[in-house]
Amino acid sequence: MWLRSLLAFMLGLAAVLLAAGALPAAWLHQNVFDEEGFVSFSAPMVEDSGFRSALAVAVASEASGQLDVPPAVRALARPAIERVVGRLTELDGFEQAWRESAAASHRLSLADPEHPKLAVQLAPLAQLAVREVADRLGVQAPAVGDLPVRFDSGRLEGYAAAAARLAAAWPWLAAGAVAAAVAALLLARRKATAVFWLGLGTAVAGLALWLAAGQLPGLAGGISAGALAEEFAVRFAQLATAGFQPWAAALVAGGGVAALAGLVARLAGQRSGPTGVSRKNASR
Image (tube, rainbow, N blue to C red; front, side, top):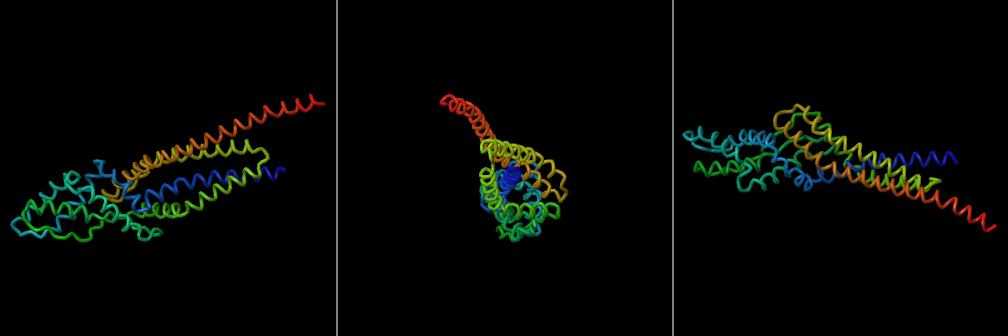
């Protein structure tokens, strides 16, 4: 009997741990490693002034070499680019250029998810800036070539590789959590008690994930990999915290509901037990 209870406990613990892994894995798969999801997720990045400034500096540096202008106006090109880039987010077509840049950056960085090479593809943004400056200088806007800015950070790429492996495993983690939970309930001698502890464990796991997500911006702030990479990491972490914490809160709520249901069922069973015995005795 004790072996059955121990096995039920171990399966319940496994279910909670697998669920705690499946939730961030599914979030990463949907919002980071899926290209369309990443484009939508990264859309608010440019609302941050620090990231916008670092992005503008990078675009100005890359775009200045793309203009084919006469020597007499070459000295005017860089200041004109800097003025245009300073208001890049206000230009018509910026939103589309940023979405194209995010999609190209995703493909460039995750061509091999097991060995990511993180980079931002600035070509769409640089093309927008070059076209605006060319119109101001009265010259023809050239086609901007490939303009990747690599993030020279093994630490960031190590995190990305680990996240890619976790995201790829989310269906197996979720299926394992469900299977372990069902098996634990089937083996448990007191079903209501098992539901209570499964729910409580799930709520605690969700709370731990919520708290862990809140630490991401602080961890990202310690990364040293160039101005654009640092601002990207911090802004990404801020968005990840804001995006993932509601998922973790939903896990807490779901676990809490399950724990409450198990507790109510357990109390109801305890109340009906003595009544049933007394009725049986009275009938005698």
